[in-house]
View 1 (spheres, one colour):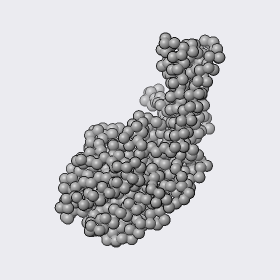
View 2: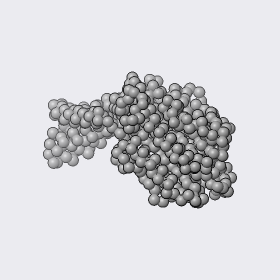
View 3: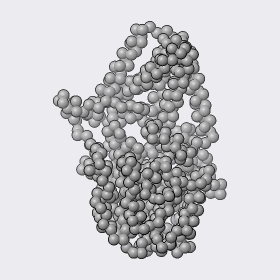
Length: 597
């Protein structure tokens, strides 16, 4: 391969990547209005040929080694980036974000094999795709040797690309300034795209906004809690046990799927909240919001300072003995550096070669903890079960059929979700037995009479419920991915009650601090929520994703992405045309900056 063939190769590669990029727009949707169509037409070549030229420059030094080295560099670099694009399209279609450092760290981290579970069929497809891409890249090398382009043609193509690149940045800058939805909604469709923003420059030039955009709060110094806690705990202190089920859908707490827990709900002191939302659509967001009662947009700051939530630190001050039993690894995400940073000798994970085996191990270790703990102290317990997240269960839990392993590479709008839902139900049914085992152990040891128990999920699990090809979680903030069951057993409230008012994970910490620790601070000092039993309507609920900040007002969901774009839909992912109340929306945005000075 000669140097002149190098740029021909990446010219062909650029066209191929432009065609590949249509996969991102197929998932996100195309915009046919004037501004939206113009942005799409210049965005795709402007961004994808940027990658082509960058890889051409990276491969250029190999010409001094020899033609074969240059050809090999082209095939290897082209194959790697083509495979990245293919994998990123799958990730984007499922979750609406791109592969980044945080996702790669999670994938290759200690809990990667527990979080990303691939079937044998999926691995075969991946290997087949890799071989196909390599073959295609080799074909491009041979084709580039056959095509002879003049210098004028290269200059013409380069000029067209410069126009496209400049135009897509200019259109985006104007679209952001004028808040044109069809432009802003596309800004994060392609990977590694950071289009130009020029609001201040356009204002200096005399242009005016068509409407004032909502501003996200800036970060500052972390202050948590806002005021020192003033507490006078009621004695004797109640034990606290939180049982969290990964990916527990809000509609799964029923006698068919969870017969044992459904039977327990008749026990005096059981309170069921049927309209409960997590604080996110991922494990990171769900667990963080459950313990801190604030959104996981604060994650980096709390993690860097290793600042634990007040429900944990104050329990330690009161002499609680901690027992943390997670099935999945607490280092991915890094809960050992924030939520449980102050727990001595923290148990990071469970033993077992499958999610269901690790769930069993977590429960068994909790039961051992009950036998060996200091009975003169109250305990703060946490059990985190993982089987539904992995669609995993032992053979004796196969109650719903037909059921088959989920293969995300084969899922489409037309895929029948029934066999996957059955497999998911079997995993929940298996966890139902483990929850019953824990509650029975507490009853047999006489601990129910003095233990506050919370049962909930970290987030939901969608199986194309919105009919827009979303599977799993971490991809939108509808009820399917954020609504979870919530049950609290409080022996001091002997009645059995079902509540329908809107609650969220942000209400858990205020309930514990007020009812158990006797804290008199207003919840706003340390949380976004209020007591679960306060039935006053909440004006809004906030969520945080990996790159989004979300405000839900009633069923109206407003999503701010990392580029400042704004999308709106309802609880079932249908577009919302009416405008949200601006005052409530602004109050919701303040929640993301309340604990910064």
